[in-house]
Image (cartoon, rainbow, N blue to C red; front, side, top):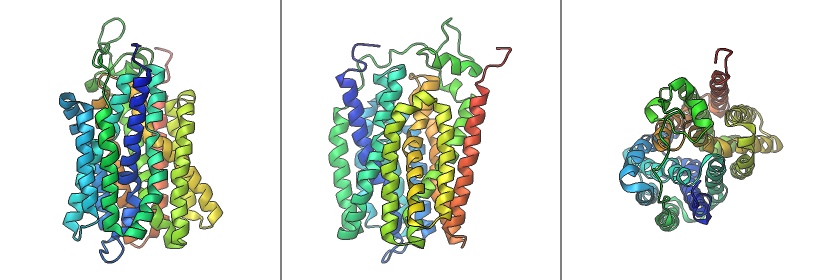
Amino acid sequence: MSPRRGSVAAWSVVGGVALIMAVGAGVGFYGSTIYVAALTDAPRSFSVVTVSIATGGFMLVSGLGGILVARTMERFGPRSVLVGGTLVMGGAVAALGRVDDEASLLVVYALMGIGFAAMSVVPTGRLVAAWFTDARRNVAMSVAFMGLPIGGVIGTPVIAHLVETRGFAEATVWLAVVLVGVAVPTGLLLREPRDHGATPSPTTGAGAPVPPDEVGEAAQHAEVSVPAAVALRTPWFAMVTLGLALGMVSQIGVLTHLFSAVSDVRDAGLAAATVSTVTFASLVGRIAGSWALGRIGLLRSAVGLLAGQAVALIGIASWRESDALFVTAVLLGLTVGNMQVIQPLLLVDRFGPAEFPRILAVGNLFVTVGMAVGPLVVGLGVDLGSGYGFALLVLAACSLVAGLLVTFAGLRDRPTPER
């Protein structure tokens, strides 16, 4: 480890990344559940399906944008990408409160997706990975990504209050001002270590190229980086990525519609309390996860999170009493806080840091496709007359299948007698 790694400068980068992710996730990610309710109310009265498609488009564009972001960083660095993305997202959020037709809604959400891609996991993950090695990297990335649930805990009630007291149009302007005012100066202060790029050659200790079937052992037991071209062809990458994508179908589907799903059968007060409970529990889960993930094992943790998410979704679909909703909201929140960080941790642990941004960008694309599909699954369920209960059970099934895929990926890593 270089003298700078793990230093005050390194942990300052972690703190800056956490702050940027908190404000970006609060306005762009967790705010989406409030935006759905606002956009489907009079006088705009967009349909639930229309807003679901727009929200899904936001997720999809952010995934596609991650690949462009990874390539752009190679030329301009993560700091410039972060600042530029913040400005784009801020402008789109301000415009969201003024859209009055479906085409404008789709365009604004697409711009939000571009901005969010440039200020979320790909550039921030690269910054943190550049400053830390091995065991400390997992801890540092867990702490940095704690900004996601913090943004939900703080942002959700603030956004709901602003929309209720100021109106949606004025609220989005204030949100844009806060986003740009916090994230731009913070992003300008972030930098990579001077020796970034001096990473080990992506080979085994003997100097031979790492075969796709052996990249797990090679990357996990030494600070070895696997080329993206090799990593992306491994069955492990395919199964884990598909599993996490299905997991995010479930997670984003329920988070986007949670307020509406609860208020549909109870009242707005309980719906707001349920959302706040989920976001607060996600923060508690993230804090616990920063200690537990490495000790339990990342793959085992992912399977447990997906199983817990399925149970929570079944509970929300089936139970209507306040106490039962509180219990399921807590369980859902505990999974949310860690599901959002598990992919970059798995990938950098498996394949090393050198080409981590490119590998993460591809993996994140598939995961964000899942994020894009999630709101649409629920929206179609409601629009077709099946209601929120059935749609949530479909999301629970997606989580269960996801857990099985990640389990199979782990079983492939067990050594056979011939090895």
